[in-house]
Image (cartoon, rainbow, N blue to C red; front, top):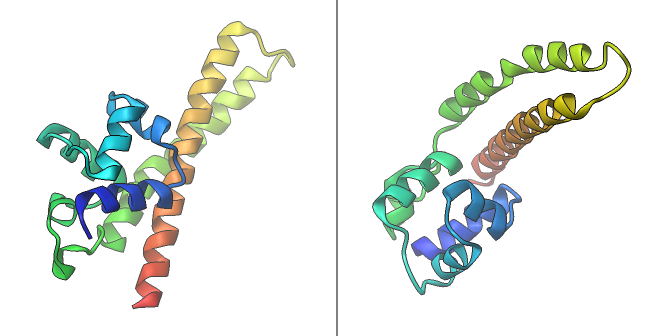
Length: 139
């Protein structure tokens, strides 16, 4: 599988759009489209960012052989998830604080957007772990 197919596959596994991936990587949606169609290839800094985002090695992304197609191991994924999941207590506390007066003002709305972003990140990590578990059971 080539790098274009891998980027497309990983993006779809995390259930994010080309536009969302582009925003996270600070490139245009058209750039992501070109990567996924093989018309261009990400530079090394973007490859590092893609590797981090999808929890896969650079070797997996750039090599075209079977031995390198192993995504990050499940242990590493779960540890990363635990790090992000520790924010849940803070999120709960912040939501209680926001709702204390029963009205969400503009500042609290901004805080809630940050909370939603954190929850989306946790949700994406759960999807990555679920996909890793499914791929292990398929082998």
